[in-house]
Image (cartoon, rainbow, N blue to C red; front, side, top):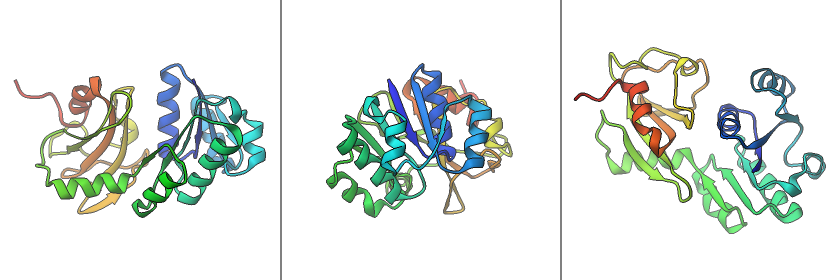
Length: 222
C-alpha cells in the first residue's frame, strides 16, 4: 500500500519505520526542516518537507493514489484538516487521526474521519479498569488487523529499567506510545529513561506480545 503519514514526531517516526519494515511504500510529511533532515538521515529519503494541511502539498505528494492517510501530529486541528482534505479532495478511502484531546474524538468521527487514536483515552481506561500492576495486559484490540494496545509495569531489576527507549530491542511490529509515571502521562522520546514503577503503554502485534514482555520485564517464569 501507499501510506502517507502526517507528522514526524516520535509517533510518526516509529510508525513510518514499522510500515517500511512491512514492505509498504511510505511517505512522511514533516514541516520542520531540521526534523525532516534528521529522519531522512535515519530512514532514508522518505520525508517530504511541507505542511500536510495545505492542498498544494497534498497534491505534490500524490495523495490521490494513497490507500491510507494517517495524521499523528501533536495538533488536533492539523490532524483533522489533513484527513478531511485527503478524503474529500483526493478521494483517500481510509483516514486515521491521532486525537490529543479526547473531547475532540466525537467531532472527528462526525466530520468523517474513519478512525481515531487517543493515548489519553487509553490511560483513562487503565485507571477506570483498575488493572493490576505487574502484568502485560491487553487494553484494547484494534478493530482491524492483529494489533493490540498493552500495558506493562517496569519493576526494579527488569531488563528495561533505567534504559533509554531508543536502546530497547523492541519487536519489529511494536511501539511504545506512552509512559505513566507517578500518575502523570509522559510522551516518550528516544532518550527517555524507563524507571522502576513506570507503566508502559505500547502498540504491538498480537504475535509479538510475549517478545515485548521479555524486552520490558524479562522472561516469564516457568
